Image (cartoon, rainbow, N blue to C red; front, side, top):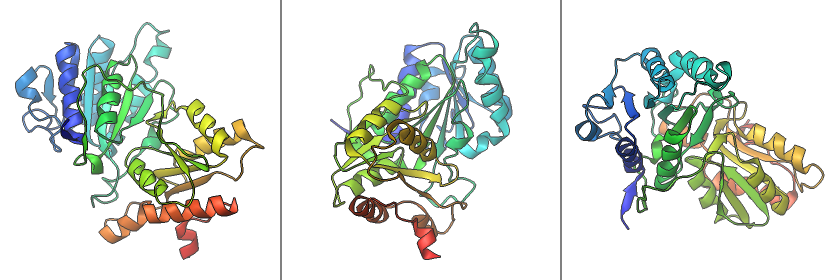
Length: 335
């Protein structure tokens, strides 16, 4: 079993999908001749040709619109947004056109399209290139949103997304591209969209997380005074309410660890749903560990403070479990 980089898992998923299905095409800025800015499409042009691996102009509105049309006509386009922020000028094509096509056509037309993008903080790219922005897509009827967390989940989620009959946004935490793990590719491996995974079992509290925060949560769980369960949500929309509810019903406490601001984070929806499902049986109010409601700092020291880290997560969980009261976030205590 070889050590595989996450970026290699992206490349292998795209390569296998192109080989397996002639309807799959890949398109985006600098993804063909240059092999992609993060080298996740390297070699695809030589292997599959310029009609299926397509360099586009610097016009997200144009090439995402072209992908919607191609999908409606039977193709399965995979569109790369170099940074997720770049989709801002093309949100209409995704959320108004692609997401509603099945509904508007009474099911006669579908849009089997994937938009995959690098996202997230931790590499000093500054506030305009370091966001997750899943809140731009979550809750949009007709869209699915997934976040990868390692090489295995990257391959399994991306293959499932490409085969899905409806549009899927795949967020790939950029900080993970160079992470390596023992993984042997299986061309048949898929992770069903809408399902979460229990990464670590526990009985005192449930941490729900996703993306780059999975490694923060698992490191924290190994160091807390409590026996903590960790769930990788994987799909943010529609999320796996059943798995989370069953876990929290056993542990009695819910913690979310999010690479999202307090005001925009997916954990608010999870907490509201779990309180509705388990009201009266929880040992404590849900605890959300998030980013402050502020832009991502450029300074390395400030960015490191801005993001949840194991020391902070351990401190917060220990206080929750020992007192059954939710502690204040660091920025309130600091003020």
